[in-house]
Image (cartoon, rainbow, N blue to C red):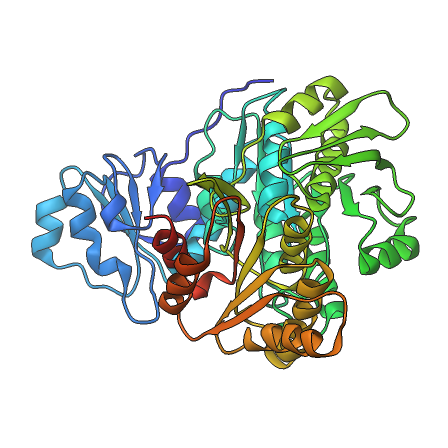
Length: 470
């Protein structure tokens, strides 16, 4: 399966970007790229990105001092003194738009690799599904995956730039507006596309779940001919779309509830794992993270692994050995208190799943520390109130909210306490700041508690984790 890859050169970059070579040799090879001058390593190519306030191109000399051998820059004048200083061993390319140039270079580099590429999108579960898929594919061949959540117009090119001797690639694709996934898919040219679900993430920008579905389906526009789409058939909008379009595309489905190509049965849910039998087989699948949403992810991994003819026992091994990206359902124990850190991002679907997991924890006091879900626009009040209903439904013992929007979660729980004779949240605390939440948690926490920290990334819940684990 291994093949010698063509090396990317300065000449290739000039050709695909229509850039101008200020200094340097056209035959210089370009392997590693970096957009942060503070993180540059020897022989990197520095990418000077124009931000809202700062033009990264102005830091190219700092990058050169750290060993970068070249730079791709925009909106900057290179002085004669700089030309003289760096002409011997550096190159500088000027382009109109560095981000557009990155995308053009990534598109070209992708064309040099005849390898399987899997692209993943969805309102929730992209990163954990990516981690699991990559682990499964690694059972067959060396696989590159998106680092962290580098899933946007900059992150996808940076992922492709990392391609070297890998034999497969798993690329995560995120979006907040229509048109964004179309661009990413046309860069990555996937053989297999995965849509994990269609929820409410970014609904404030897109206006409706139907528009979110439309945005996710843009992934098909870059899919290679004879490519395969893998979808979560339990998601209502994806299920409806599948029934209407199953004759138009090559589609593989997975699910727990709706009849699908890959299904789980006899699911046993434990505190730190789930075990089930793959329907139609004798294969038992062990998922090392609890929650039905991770069972869904594993079914997706089985579907994709099967496309690439990976034996089922190897797929099961890849699922068992996968590691979650940091800050996503990161479960730690400190002083006999279990802490679930899941605050890289939050929307209704992921918040609901996290509360469902917490609700199933047994023999422990359940504490949910919930912050604002951002970018929900006019739907914010309604969706935060629905999370309040999930808090009650999952019989959470103590609710602590942080942020203006999260007050709606607390309000629903408080109203339920007044009106219900049965299910009650024993304590509801509304905080204005992370520090206030830290003080409350440190006062009330006790051995055998299970504490969930869940909020959008912008709420900086890492502060709370640090404050309660000192």
